[in-house]
Image 1 (cartoon, rainbow, N blue to C red):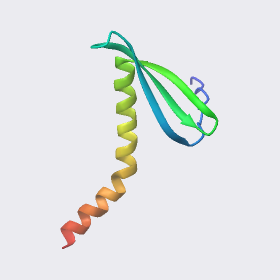
Image 2 (tube, rainbow, N blue to C red):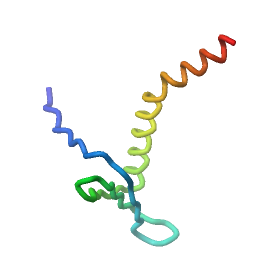
Image 3 (spheres, helix red, strand yellow):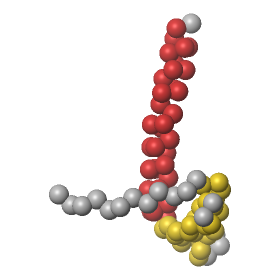
Image 4 (cartoon, rainbow, N blue to C red):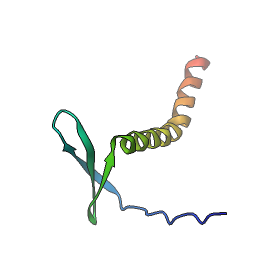
Length: 79
């Protein structure tokens, strides 16, 4: 089995920046900056990379929020 790469855990993120690179109406990549207590961590994403990142983050948030959503639905159906 392939060895899993080491996961980098960032310090608490307190903000973010985004900048676009390329032609004004149709940028080719975005540069994301995560503001942490250690400073700014930057990375660049292509269009497909940004879509993949958004899908991954949305999936994570859906799983985090699922118990709250389930409890709210249960309260509504119990009334």
